[in-house]
Length: 205
Image 1: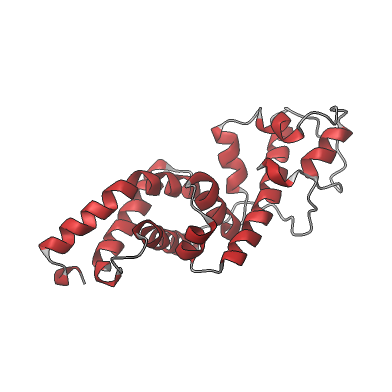
Image 2 (image 1 turned 30 degrees about the horizontal axis):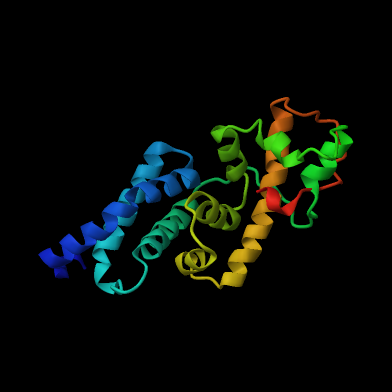
C-alpha cells in the first residue's frame, strides 16, 4: 500500500514516471481516442503504480511495467463499455491493397499502400485503429505508436514474443482493410470493388 512507501520511494517513483508520462498519454489516447479519457487512464495507472511501487524490481523496465498497468486498467474499463463494429478478417490473405488498387486500374508499379495512406490523416488512422479488436489494437499501438520493441511489447502485455509477432501480423492486415474501407467511405477510392479479394503488401504498415 502507499502508506508503506517512503519519501525516498516517492522521489524515485516520480523520477521514473516523469520521462514516460508523455508516451503514456499518447498511448492512452490512441486506445481511448478521447483526451479526457486518456488523461483519466494515465492518472488511474499512476495511482495504481504508486501504490504498487514496492513490487517494481529496480533493475527491470519501468516503462514496460507502467504501460502494463495502464493496459490492464484499460482492459478493465472496456469490460463494461459497448464495442464499436470490429473488422472481422481472420481469413484475410496478405495482398489486400495491392489487388484492390489493381481492380481500380491503378498502375501496379505504384505503391497501393502509399496511394491510400497518402490520403490518410491522423483522424483516419485513429478511426482505422478503433475498428480493431482490443488484442490487436493494444499491441499495434505499443509497437507502431509507442515504438516499443517486440520484447518490450511482450513484457508489457505478459505474453510470448511469438504472440506479439502474430498479433502484429494480423493487426497489419486488419489495419490495411480498415484504411481501405474508410477511404471508400470518404470517397478517396471507388466502393465498387470485389470484397472477396482481401489484400496488401505486408511491409506497407
